[in-house]
Image 1 (cartoon, rainbow, N blue to C red):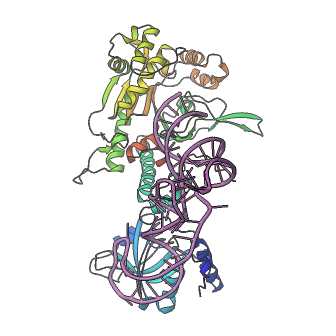
Image 2: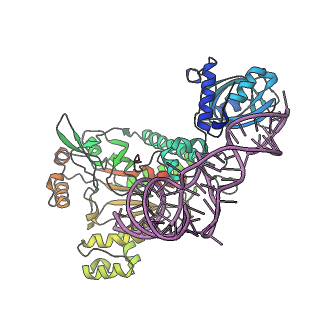
Image 3: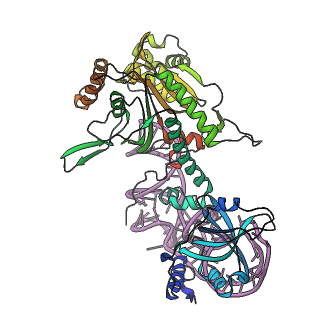
Length: 500
RNA sequence: GGCUUCCUAGCUCAAUGGUAGAGCAGUUGACUCUUAAUCAAUUGGUUCGGGGUUCGAGUCCCCGGGGAGCCA
């Protein structure tokens, strides 16, 4: 049958191709076969009634991940979306010929469907005793090592499917991401938020300060940029009378790649009319606690439900259940510099102060940029427990309302968890004249970057509103205890490999 | 973009500048309740690519490719 010349016996690809060729020569082509699956693996196991062996029939399918042949009986495991299930093949059940096919033509990695009945083994594992099986896809390439899995980072990212097959942690983490996104949708829909979709191709990259990707539309003869933020189009929805809207979508920023940055990343933005930044505080806290309690469901050492998740980078346990700290930006700066009069200091004094903290700044920077260097380099990374930083300097964001009793700050918060910015939120600026002034000041020489169409929309009247953005990737880093954004993105951006 | 570091069999990893090895996987055989099954035998290498130093390079040096970490 499988007459494999010894000179290819070392080449697993060649051996598998030979097995496929033999099968086809024998009249069976796995790539033309299929199976009518009745259950996923765990659902099938749940059907088993204790003491009632061989009474429940199931048809399950999946990838062969364990292969243990011992003469006339064999145990194998297949893996599907729900996990693994053990199968028991016996010569006296299947007959000499089919059992021979099972032993000779199947390999680890093949995808098979089997029909049989459930029983429990001596060691207590619910197993399918196979009465018939079909190969429905031949794996021509071998799986990575069964015990250590795949650990080469490059292969994990470039061939994520292999990582998902052999690394249970990755499978679990990336499935958890799906569940988190789904739960965010349901949470918002339950509160009457409408999900909308706004343009990715935009004429002006608004809503944030970042370098966009450029592209071109041939038929329109127009240059476009890929969006860097969802903000300005969602606010137009508020003008249009959609009072509670959100979008979960991809943003693109043409900047560095790091453990916390991927050029394309997923943002959630939420806008709620007649709310403000304080309303967003309640919303995000409720959302995050819901995600921890009902989706991530962490347990402590004793196996009891907890609201704490271990922060991979610091090893500290982040407690989502405890009261979240709220602190003003300026107080954090005064605390970090040990200078109660920091904001009254001259620029030269500020530069000296920043350098005393071991940071270097460009003397051409504005005062607020110098101060903000302390925030982003010293303060932010140290805020591991959930912290609302409020009343940021107005220069940091042109889209928020000025604080009524302090014209130098804005009514916003920045939620920091695990040393990362997770969610900024504002009381949204809805005064078209103030907004125009802020935009023009920010654009400076580049007035063409002002989104005039958005300002026109504001002139039609936007209700007062609270708005918030949440970086979904970073949220997933936190909630899954991942170390890098690449661990929560299925296909993180890598260099394309050049052919020799 | 800069600095540091890594790239060895399908996978996970070894190898003072001196004959490239192991485990898993593969191949052949034994084995009808295994759990990283076990037992016996056995195949498998352009050491990322190119150049250099050396009697001799996986190892040292240079150029290039890719990954990771830190920085910008």
